[in-house]
Figure 1 (cartoon, one colour):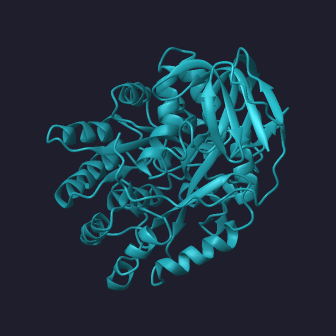
Figure 2 (cartoon, helix red, strand yellow):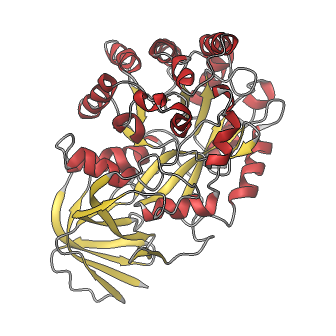
Length: 460
């Protein structure tokens, strides 16, 4: 099967040109003006933007959490991602304390294998680092192609590791060419504040936010940066939300250190005033919580300053009935919100259209940087000869609105209900196959492929 995309304005992280793309099989074979090749299918992209497929490196599909599971499984989640222009996601395997990393990998493969519509990979979340776990790291990097390892500085008793374990893990991961991702918030301080608010019978969603003040994130981000600097292990802070935490990264640059930073679309666009809507605020209960307007300004600036490299989602949806588990106690509200389908269009409409970021920067933070950081560039994350033919054809002028009535995520509300956007995904190609066309998904579950990644050698 061959495919030709004609006359589109092709935007990559470092280029902007009107040209044709010729695709044969799963890869891009030629790019240029007025290409002579004849294809089995031709798409006229005149007046449209053509981007590399989006990469969301922070999602939680079919994830066990607080006695339930996130409501999007690998089929519904990766399909919804495709509708929104995201052709690949990276999910998190969670080690069960006392069990091996390989046991966790087997558990997650049991849910993902044969069920994904779009491409995917995994980060390995280490919650119990010991000599047995240490011996598994090399296998994950060299044989499984899983090169990134997640750690939690919060969720004590379930996911959190201490600084001693963090240092040991960093040294082992560095030795074999991997990367450490971190949830950087001070778990002990948060646990204290949660208990304090509960004892005072302050149980509304607002107290989820008040139990995780900015200082809990700023302190942990700085501590993580220090440990990463000491060990020399590449470090990546997931879902960074606030000025204090980004300033910790700024401080690290003064000693010539590079700390990779991801924020999420919600932290750029939503703020903590939503928690004042009585229990409806549960829709936006996530960790870290939404922050203040000044933090949004800091994050947009951080993107343009090159301090924030990736905009992800931390997509972890729960239906309203699941959120009601915490109706009488904010600490029992499942943490997470749905955004996997909305990220690319929201970032374009609120970022590019409003002059906050350029088109090239948009492609960087929505796709290319994640591919480089996590060891899959130039296979993914760009439009180039030899790259996977993961392509989004985008109408920059089409107006539409977000609603739970029309989205494809398996959740019965939208965190962005009624938002009016300019710019819409029209056609999506995944490895040479048309995946989304005329608002229909043409691929079946099982088409999505696990992507093995290479050692962390690429720098941005």
